[in-house]
Image (cartoon, rainbow, N blue to C red; front, top):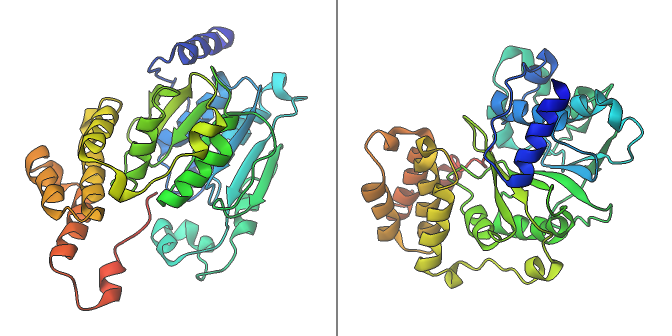
Length: 331
C-alpha cells in the first residue's frame, strides 16, 4: 500500500495533475506549534514528504517562523528509511526577530510562552519546537540579501514574499536551482489579498511553473517546476508598478483564478484591486469590488481589509498610526 501510494503521487506530480493527498492525521506536536499555517497546509507538507519527496534535492523553507512548516517536513523525512543516509537537508530561513503584528498570532493561553517584545529574538523557541529531528539547517538571514550556494532544490516552501523586493530577491536566488521535472514550489500567500505581486510574477513564469495542488482551506498553492528556470529569466525580472499594463493585470489574475478553488476567488480579486489601488487607479480598484464580487463575498475578512485600504486613500485619516494599524503582513 505504501509503495502504491508513493508511486501514484509521484506519477501525478510528474504529470502535473491536481492531486488529492490522503488525510493522514497530524501529530499533536505539529498541531501545538503556533503559526499562520492551517492544519490543511501542515498536512500537505507532511504528506508531500511522506509520499512524494525523492531526496534528489534539498527542502528549503523560507519564512519558517515558529516551525509549523519545518516540523511536519522534518518529522516525515526522519521516518523515511530510504533517506537515512541521504545528504539532502531541510534549510529553514527566518530573521527570528519579533514584530508587533505577531502578537495576534498567539491565540491561546497554552501559547503564552511565545510572547516576545518587538525586536527580540525567538530563535530559541524555533529550536525548541524542532528538537529531536535531524537534518534541519537553520539560516538566520535576511532573504533580501541571502545567497543560495547549496545545490539543487526539490521542494521550496515560500512564506516570505511579503514585498515585491523580497519576491524578486527570492526568485533570483532560489528559483534557478529548483529541479526541473520534480521540483515543487509552494506559494503560501498565493490566495491572500495583500501579495498581488506573486500573481504577476507567477504568470510570467507560467512556462516553467504549472499547478500541482491547490491546498484546501488555505492560501497555499503548489506548483511543479516542469523545466529548469534559466538564471537569466529571473535575473532580468523587475516589478515596477507603472510598467504593468492593464492587459497584463487582467491576464495574470484570470490565470490565477483558473488555478484555485472558486470559493476563494474573492481573495485573489482583492489582490487585483490592491494592485490597481497601488497604481493610483482608485476607481478601477473600486470597480473590482463592485462588479466582480457578490455581497456575501464582500463580508470576508480579507476582502473587508482590502476595501478598507482603498477607502483610506479616498478619505485619509488624520492620525498616521491609525492608518497603518490594520496593515498586518499576510500569514
